[in-house]
Picture 1 (cartoon, one colour):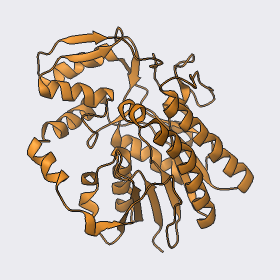
Picture 2 (cartoon, helix red, strand yellow):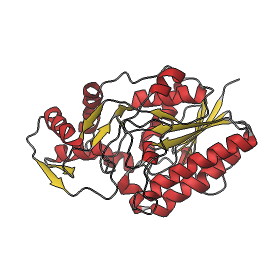
Picture 3 (cartoon, helix red, strand yellow):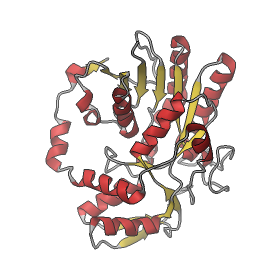
Picture 4 (spheres, rainbow, N blue to C red):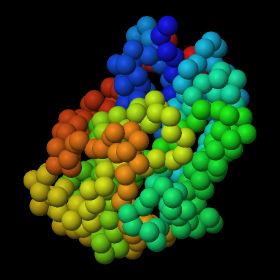
Length: 329
């Protein structure tokens, strides 16, 4: 019998790639998104496929899906600072009410559920690299707290359902991921730099640029998530690329990649912006037999090519397409 999976946040960056992976694996995919930050153009190539259906729905309200569900992947959440600082209440609600609703659905359907957590649960870390047994250094009342604490609560309620109800739950702590279908204006490092380069603007580096990030190509990330879902491991697992680089060095790489002659300009570091970010992926290697395969040079070349080919005409064409016949309420 064909397995059936529900993916929330399905029209977003990671959610749309997950839809592709599960369709390729032979699953029936139920995609769900309220389209606050998602975009239907990310999944338009799946409309009309027999094993794909889309529901325009907000998971912070009651969630009902008719029929059997074998798996649920909860990826509904704003993930960039621009988004979650603009819609802080919705961000908190999707991490709390949304997660509660989907755990209840998983319990009803006896489905295994994977929760998309984040490296932001570590806050501005005092331990480096970050291991899963590190509890984090998070400012609960700072501007980033709406995202960080939503994800920390998400992990807590997921483990409570696992322990109290004996449910099959999985928790992925996702580190910086990049690739095609990111939004140029979402405020994250890679699309921000590429967008500035494409517009001929100087590249903006916050602080002195010595803060670090570790970037994982989307295909590697999706493979790690799939392996985690199919594993028997219930505690959080870091999924990311441990190849760490400073933001200043990365800006230089972008200038070299794009062949532009932009300058680098410096602005004040945002409040609570983490100074270091590097995953310890020992667990992923041992438990999932997973590690990233795509190096940054290869992944960035593919990502830049994607953004370079996005013309204004293409964007306008996608915005005006009528997807209504494919959407279920």
